[in-house]
Length: 360
Image (tube, rainbow, N blue to C red; front, side, top):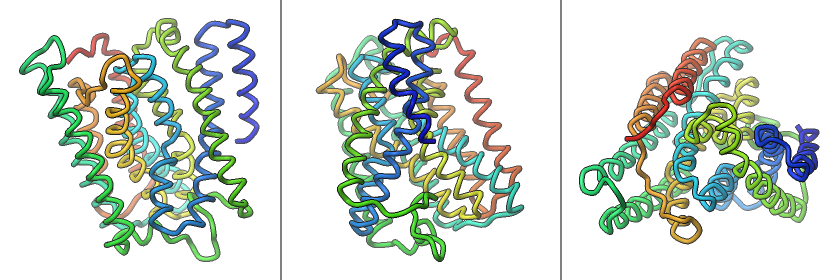
């Protein structure tokens, strides 16, 4: 994937030449993919030296760094609808698209695969917690003041964000400290391997890992600014809404490295690790990234970000989590389960593409 780093200078040249926004958007999108992979790789190298607890926190902070950076840039630019859509899209892309591809490709190579059903159910119930929290502010505004955000709604918004962060902290405590045995198969690598998320190769020095992490994060912020700047023009040129761009393009681009890791380890018949990567990423987005963006919006955005989603977004998220919970419940996967998950994702993507007005 390293050769895709060539798109960084290509994107800068295209921006300087003033090319159409569509070309600039897709060039920046391709450039972000290897940067995201480098962030994941560097995080794993740092986490391997810090122990389970700190390593888990690092992975929580940087594993979804590309999504967080893209959303922060969009937030600063005032694309609040796009940010909300990217949050929903990030969860759906990991839950349905990445897991679907992992089940499909892993099933083609290994016929039927098994994983820790108890851990999968724990991930699913945690996702349901996030789904339950999201309709609360969504119902508040139309009921009391459809035209704007009242003080009580702001307090509710911040309260939910803080509660979600607290729930995420307790989730980390539960999974890393008090009940690690429930997730043992997602944290212990296969015999003879000393890799994380399916990446092999020699161990980096700590200085190289930290330097790569900082450098990649800065590059991601740079490319994300270009990407978001071209997003609106791209949407108009291709007949796409900001919400569709957020749900599909920004979500898939930001999670490309994590999704690729889940698919790669599934093909090596390590389904527990694949599920830990993809569903763990969903939980990070719902319980960590979303509330962080809400709190950050009070400082960097033109208007505060509400966790207030329209009916299509809430319906897609609810059905996606429900389908995922049903598929994961028996602890086995095969290629046709992958087809089922990817088919649901295709339905949702088409729905967002063809709905002209997503007003609640």
